Image (cartoon, rainbow, N blue to C red; front, side, top):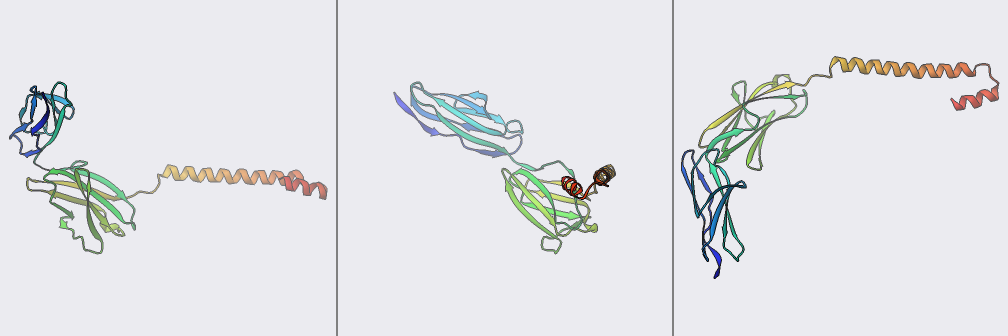
Length: 231
């Protein structure tokens, strides 16, 4: 008897849809090991070799566990990824509000294998440049997604409308159309309610003050002074 040792640990794979994927998990041990495979925690196979066609249903993290009686198991992991055009968070269309005069941010976030190589922003059919006085762009990594943020400095009326984000990689491209609209003021009902509440409060305060003053009218000077302090 001897403890297990890796001969071939699982290796991550990147392929195209429909390709045949092969993951190998080989351990030298005595007695002979048994193998189990799990995908994202779910049992998907047994044996040292796991094969399957690549699709969106078979991508994920695969774990091979090699078990030998009397010894601790060996565990190996591999990621299976599929090449694809960028997938844009939020779908192909979006709506966003902003206040004129403020600096506004519009985001376009994409996941893809390989990662997006290019983000292009356009407004009314014209490609935007990041070195203009009005527009600038930054890209940041968020987990397995890449985010492009379009920054509009001191937005004016002519800057509201439809913006398009184009994300692309070597596999393909995806587009997202975002409508930027001016933020509306508070609803009329809210404004009217606030005005009525303020008017009622003012009326109540004035009525109490007037009632207090009348109550003390005609009182003696000393009594009036004490009562006035209590009011």
